[in-house]
Length: 334
Image 1 (cartoon, helix red, strand yellow):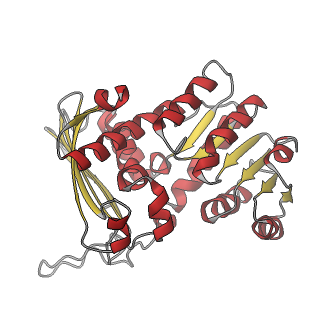
Image 2 (tube, one colour; image 1 turned 30 degrees about the vertical axis):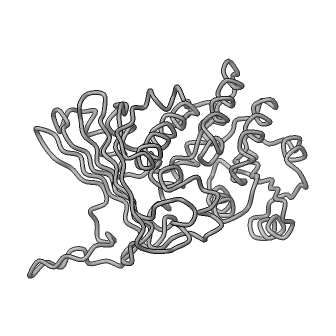
């Protein structure tokens, strides 16, 4: 099949490399406002270059991958749907929840699949955890712990436009908690602090946060995030039930140092970047998209899924700013 890529920044170029290595993908068509980025992709992957999204949609593509700036996501999703072309779009659906809801309304009833990029759903550890929960191996759940710790903050310009740590970082934890447990979040309580880069505080954001999520069956989920983890990129999950307990991310590249005597775990070089930690997950995610394009599977992460994670992020942001518990229903009605 022929896949179009809109946007060739860090993640777009990474997707181009991944797609070029998939057996199902015969050719790529790319476009980016920066001509040098498009030219580099063409030279590296043998892609065809066009000068606009409109030209890309008219270039005989079977599916499109939207990796452009967040502000462009709604228009590009809708353009793909109107052209009848399956769409993969990096999260979020839109910069604000109201815009995301409008996108959902606009595509409802259209017979064009849309997949939103939440790559943890394709990581083997998380896939196995979900299977264990669904299979009843843990019994009734009582506690979930989910962690995302970045090795260093992103640039100040990114922080200023990100919408905050809950919307751009924690949202991955929120999505994977929903996906692994199969439950919905009903209420949150969030806290945060700033003990690192001044530009994060100046942007009105926190650099380290914690959130308590109450799930609809009474399970408690604890989410921990930080922009500062000197040892590396740390993504883990623990799931505790009345029958058993399991963990995702306890492997030799875990960026954590044990101080127990005689313990050598973990022994490997710590993960230092999300592309390192989730290389295979990204490949599985885009392989799934080729199956969506081929019509052999439904979207594994819909706009509805992405918006549900977004509502949790909205509730946590409000809770942090107002120092109180917030229900998901409250932010939906706001």
